[in-house]
Length: 188
Image 1: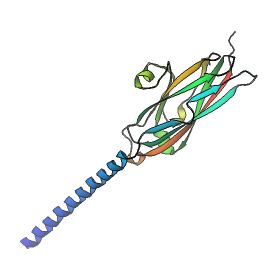
Image 2: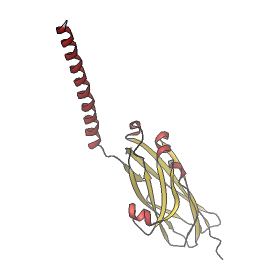
Image 3: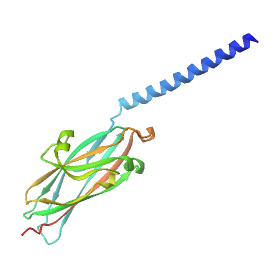
Image 4: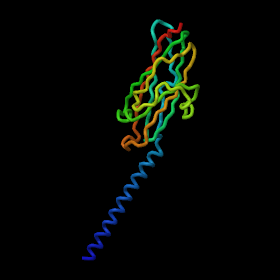
């Protein structure tokens, strides 16, 4: 009887060790895959939006933001410029439509500031908030931003994926389309 109990406890210990080795092995494989794959990548389809209102109607232009292989804790800063290519001053605004992984787009936080140039954590913090940081990728919006003829506005986008999210969101992707619209300024 003592032999059977000793053998049984030895088997339980071996099984427990095997489980620990498998779990640690899986985590190492997952980390290795992440090391060889670009994570937290972001790109704009165009980095300069050109608008004009030289005619009677406004003008519209788009830029798409692609976010790929995001991991919880992602903290991304992206710069984009808006240029008045016409001869008239205007007011412009932006609305956002998200696409891609809906769960991920819901959990992302986004904010937009007007800056003097560049785009990083310090520049973003010193900028003028146009769209305060909010949860959901499609909440980035603002209106009434004045831009003089021939001038350029520098915008800094801050995108975050909070750290305390399920690992099921790891390496997911999302996209957003930013629709910029200009209307003639009514300055007198």
